[in-house]
Image (tube, rainbow, N blue to C red; front, side, top):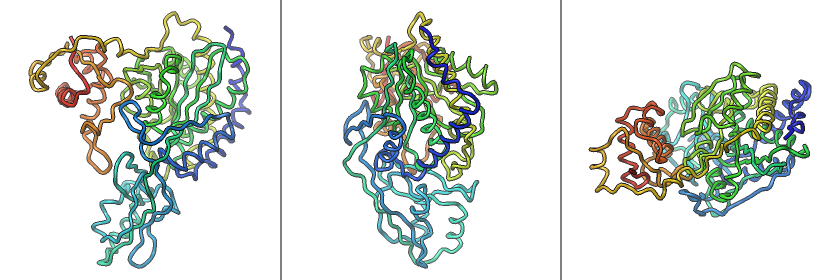
Length: 483
C-alpha cells in the first residue's frame, strides 16, 4: 500500500516555521484556563481544541467505576487567597492559578503562621518560582508561593492570625475528554494521546496539546490515509484509565502509538519504549531519530511516568511509547511557574511536529510488512485460567520464594489504585520511592511469563526491595504465585 498520501506531512522549512509560530500562539490562548482533571478549565480547553479540529467531546459521570478506579468528583474553584494580618493578600489565585493546590477543599478560617505553614509549598532552591502541586483523590488544601515571599512572611511572623479563604468544592459532575478518529484504508489505528489537566504549564503540557492538535489538523485534511488514526486529549491517569475501560472493543485495533508531552523546550528528543520494547513503533522511532535527530536519548520502558504506563499495563500491553524532548522531572522548570510561555519555543514545537510527521509516515509504510501483529493486548488473559498456587499467607510464601517463581497480576488492566490497598502515600505524605518502584515493576511484569530473576534484571532493583513489594501485593490480593 502506498503512503504517498502522507508525503505532505514532511513539510518545507517555511511551512514548519509557520506551524511552530501558530502552535506557540495557540499555547498562549490555552494558557490562562485553570485546568484540573475535571471541571470548567478542561471544558474550555476542549472547546478551544474543537475549534481547530473536528473533536468529539465525551463524558462519563463522577462516581463511575472504571477498571480499578472511580471517576472523582468534579472540582469547582472560584476564589482563593491568604490575607496577611495587615490586610494585604500575600497569596492570590487571581494572580496565578498555580497558587492553589489543585483539588483543594474549601476553607474559610483564621490561622496562626505556625498553623498555616504546613499548608504552604515553596521551592527553596529556586526562590522566585512557584511550584505546582495537586491533591487529586485526596481531601486536603494548600497554597503554593515563591520561597522569597515565604521568607518575608516568616521574618514578619505576627501573633495575629492570617485569614485563609478558598471558595472551592468537589461536586457530582463529569469527567470529559476529547477524541478524534480519522479513518484510513486499513482499520488498524495509530493512537496519539496527550494530557490536558495541568494549569498554565507550557512544556507540560500545552506543548503536547498544541503539537497533537496541529498533527491532527494536518492528518484530517488528507484523503485516503493508509491507516487510521485516533487522537486522545485526556486528563492524566484517570483519563487513560477511563478511555481504556470504556473502549474495550477499540483497544485491539491499536497497532502502535505515542504519548506526547514536553515538546517545546530546547532539549534533545527522548523516546521511552513500549513495554514490548521491540514493537514496530519502537523500531520506527529509532530509525527516524537516528536519521533526523541523532543526538536523541533512548529510554527503556519503566512502569511509571505518563499515560504510557496505563496503555502498557500487562492486560492491555499496547505497543505505545512516549515521545518527549526533556522528560518529566529532568529540567528545573518542571512543575513550576518557570515552565511558562517563554520556556517553550516556536522552533522547538515545529521540530517536534516534523519528527512526529516522519515517524507516522515511516510507520504507515512499514506496517503492511509486519508478518506478526505487534498488538499484545490481553497478554494476561492467557494466564487467568492458570492454576493458582494455594498457600496459607504471604509469610509462608516469602520463606520459600525462589528466583524462578512467577506471579500473576490479578488487576492487570491499567494500574491499580494503589492508595486503596495502602500502597501509595498521598498529598502531603512522604514517599518511599524505591518501594513504590518495586510495586509498579511487580505489577507490570507479573504476567505469568517473567520470573523473579527476570524482574530483578529488568528493574535493576535489589531483590530485598522486591521481596517487600511481593509480600505487600500478595497480602492485599493484587498478585498471586502461579505454577
